[in-house]
Image: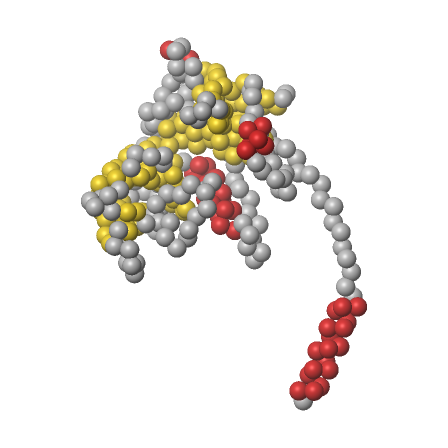
Length: 297
C-alpha cells in the first residue's frame, strides 16, 4: 500500500513539474496621489501635512521622503465664522536642516487664525496643481474620560522595573463615543498605541478598567514582546481624545492595514479617507484631555 502511495505521489509531482511555466507580470507604476494628514485639536491651531504617495516598489530614503512634501499649495480652513489661509512652514533639527514641512496659520495676523473648539465643525480646502480637495471634521464634546491612572508590576517578567499602567475609563450612556489615545514618557513626544482607536459598542454607559499600552513610534522597529510596558521612574502622560466617526474609521482601517502587512492570508484593506477627489489620508478633529502618572523608582 505504501509503495502504491509513493508511486502516486511521484506521478503527481511529475505532472506538476511538467505543467510548470514561468510567468512574468509587468506591473504599471501606481498613480501619484495627494496624501493629506490634517488635524485640529481643542485649544490648538490646525496642522496640515501634504505629500505625494510612493509607488509600492519604491526604495524609500531620507532624500526621497524630503522630496515627497508638497509646496506652494493653497490651503484654507474655516470654522464657520473665519475662513483663513494656512501658510507653509517647516521644522528643523539641531543642525538647521529641514525635517518636515507643514501648513498652519500665520499667528501674527489676529484676523487670520483661530483655535480648535469643542463641539465645533471645520472645513478644509486644498488647491494644488489645478485640483481642489475638500474635507470636513467635527471636534466633539469630551464625553469619555480617564477617571484615574495607576500602575502594577508587569506579570510574568524577570525585570522588576517593568510596569503595566492601568486606567479607569468613564463611558457615559449614549452610543457614538469614539476615542483615540496616546502616551508620552518623561515629557517626550506623544505616540499612539499600537491599537489606538476604540468605539463604545460594548462599553457604553459603563465604568471599566483597561491596560494602557505604551504608544509606539512606527518609524522604529517594535519589540512585540515588551513594547507595551513602562519602567519604574517614568512620568507618564496619557492623552485621550474623543473623535468623530470619520476620524475613527480612518485610523481603524489604517491600523488594520498596518497589522496585515506581510500576512499572505489577510484580507485586502481599504483605508477609509474623508478627503474628496480621490486624495489619500484624512482630516480629523480631536477633543483631548491629558492625565499624568508618576511611577516611583
